[in-house]
Image (cartoon, rainbow, N blue to C red; front, side, top):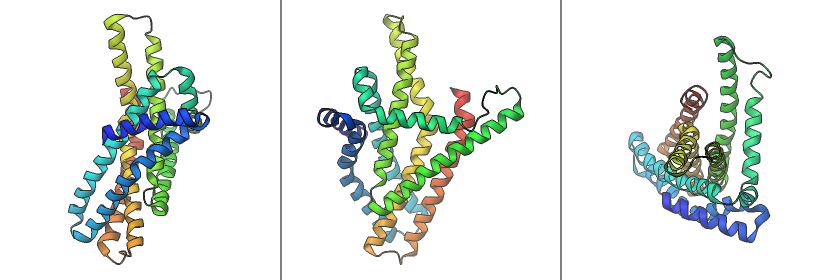
Length: 275
């Protein structure tokens, strides 16, 4: 799945830039989504059938965990491909292809920074804790919005949440790629092995800076997308009279919310300490 996501992304971005250059950023996302929808539909359909097959909820969650891993590797493949292209492509192409993603990053940063104390340098623990708490709630609310849309898109379109998740992969890729370029620029005077070591350091630093908490957020989105997809499939197949289906969906929703809460705590309180 990692290599499938990687290859789909490279092909999609190439076609988007060659055919519809002005809207390449969005079209790349759409083409990747179109490529993965058939396998995703089959997967969700299979998971909904398992709800009718198994009675124990723990067994169902174990089966769902396999699907989440399946989707996470797809997501990582998409992200890795787009990060690679962001770093190696000429700047004029990157500005065109990732224009919408850069705008999204700017909007999110402005939204989060709006919660901090303008013009004040935090000196004491009390003020610092209050500021971090405000940022935490801002991030949590923003992530809950994405989670809500994952549920709605899955309910309406069955596999619709994959669009939001692919879009998030492209935004994260732009953020990681931008940070890699910044770190490399800081050590541009280095040559030989020193430059190579700096490159790998910049790549590793950038990846883990965003994915330490990002992998938890994406997992939460995938769990919610799976819940919405199973519910959508159950409605279409008229399986809502089975208690196991409803119980399974509620458990997935609660797990998703719990993961998102943990992700927010990691992003605000742990990631800054590590990076």
